Image: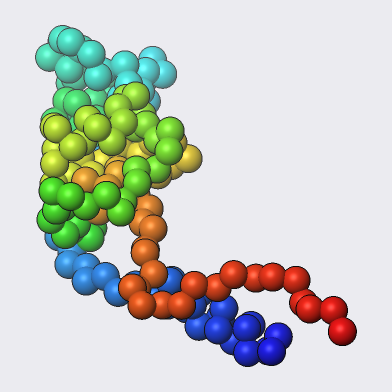
Length: 168
């Protein structure tokens, strides 16, 4: 009896965790500042990423063969990196099976709600701004195809209630 119950439990667990997803991919291009670049005064791309800095100083202060105009995305430089990412399936109106990663926020403090309203397909920012624990919106947010899912067991499956073994 104990072996039969164990096999039944194992079969139920296999049914619960067996889920098939169809994933298509798309590409996006993301700009990255040249790694570790600083101008001759020690200012990096973060310094140039403010109002007027690129216009006033972007072609000044070359270092390592680059100025901010060629090294920093904010000034029109940097390197374009092509990223392949999964395209989420369209979210159904009553799809309550997905849960956003609890407590996740991107580097700017935005949570998954921001992506749902500002970039619903996550095609623009889904892989550009990592957040909590280095996790991207495409991994953390349901609207982007991430999040976590709970799969209901199929109907008609027997329920298993464990009880104490009968005494002899």
